[in-house]
Image (cartoon, rainbow, N blue to C red; front, side, top):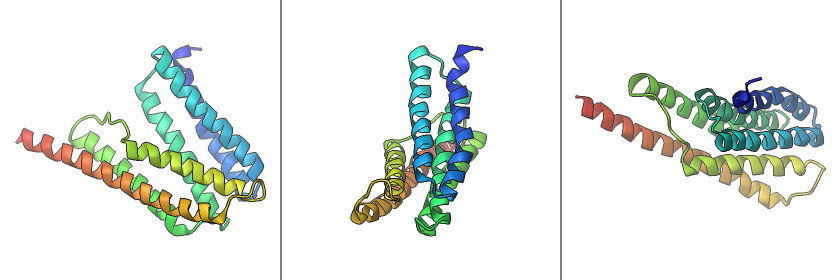
Length: 185
């Protein structure tokens, strides 16, 4: 095996974990789902560490890593809506934001220049808050009580940071695209 591909193999493994995690959530097997989510989280840190430490970063990896994160989070939020733990509007906010960002990046790449943007701080913060919120929500399902007020605040904080990070992407990359297209004329 080419060791330089190890981070990509780990990212693909995380993508594969999405299906059993979704199944376990649908069956309300929160303890097992949390174990797999923990494994996915550790592997997320591991693939990034290996890629950066050893210079194994790749274009494929820059696509697979965030894709694995997005698929896992979307699956968790969708399944929590499906089984009645979360309101549909929260999943709608998250899904719309992700569609807008992905579509914008795709059009930017096609019409302006190759998209090589690192996620802004608001997006990284949003991802961390989504993960913490999902973990707290699952822990509260009979594993470890979490105060209801924390979950209620968490719901609105996740919605707010999701919207803010989406708006920041649109603002920053829209402005950059406008400047580049203006320079070309």
